[in-house]
Amino acid sequence: MTFAPSSFRDPDARVLAVDGGRVVRVLSARAAAADAALRANGLLDELVRDRLLVPSAPTRDVTIPDGWAAAIESPRLPFVSYPYEWSFGMLQDAALLTLRLSERLLERGVMLKDASAYNVLFDGAAPLFVDVASLAPYEENAPWAAYGQFCDHFLAPLMLEAYRGVRFQPALRGSLEGLSVTDQLAPLLTVADLWRPGVLVHVKARALLDRRTRRLATSLRREVRRAAVPKAAVLRNLQGLHRIVSRLRSRTPSVWAEYDDANTYDAATLERKTTFVAAACERLGGGRLAWDVGANTGRYSRVLAERYRCVVAMDADAGAVDRLYRSVHGTPAARAIVPLVADLMDPSPARGWRGRERAALTERGQPDLALYLALVHHLCLGRGVPLDDFLDLACASSPASVIEFVAADDPMSQAILATKEAAHPGYDLAAFRTLATRRGRIVAETAVSPTRHLFLLTR
Image (cartoon, rainbow, N blue to C red):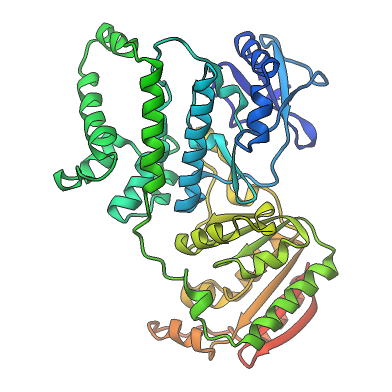
């Protein structure tokens, strides 16, 4: 029996690597006792019912390794995404979920010992806390041990985007430990920012305290850690953080968030595209997982959501992804669509300890169908990807794909080429058909305009 490569940070719980895609955690004797108590008083059932916590149950059909006391099993979500792939609204909602859960727990004599953003996953467009083993008994007058982690994983990235207009995704992708309030955010905020909610207490004062604590002797640092904090004060801090986080708003511009409203497609062209995608889903019979690459605000992701259990709607423009995320709330599509900030030219690589703690985007499940609509000209004409290389990627990534070929004389292609000097030989409709048939079969094709053709390819 082996452990999942991403599971090693909590000494009281590890996730087993078991067959069949199961999520099984083994618990230490201390964690097992805490888990049993939470189940006995009904708290876990309440949190699951209120969509704060992933369901879990004890299991006895796995071999528990030596040194561990019990095992619990949770359902596996269809797709795992990471905080550096979330939009502002997604990270904000994940932060609010963590705070709501912490408040509920504290009121019942339980404390969340870890506030890592990686403990939250998205079930469709809904955040869900998944690390059941992070719930531990509250110790009287103990501070919230996860406060610093919450600030680095949630508060600092959100403030960076809200107060400085800088996207947080590159910072979180650069470090799995989050964005340091003391070393990275505090130097960016000036005296003029002290009026902003949360800056004085949670950024400047904390940075000052951290710097002073670093200079203390070991014995004194232990005294600081053991400082008594009344339960009421911890609860007030959680409630204050909730107010601050809920009021933050992104200040970063978006290139493509308004594209779906401002593009030059007429209604008939949009209808032809929608009909073609729906027919492709019908022909293929739906499935478990689909990708919408370059999804923008998700017009066609919603079509996929009618036939696929999970639709990863990815776009490089975080503003467009955020608009998609907010627009699907309260709709049937929210159960299936997982929005993702991802650039096909630079997808998330494997990260963390030994490169195995966080899987690369391409290693988290092969889609049954992938859409590449209004994308190929941006990659090939705008960023220099050879057409045959793009088709290699499309055929390797999924057994079926819908591709919109946009000719070089299309108005959008011409706008892209207006700032380019070099020509792109071999980029034309005939070449596309030839290269596609070398890699698979063109199952269906239709022209949606004189310069745009849709293809359903199977490898």
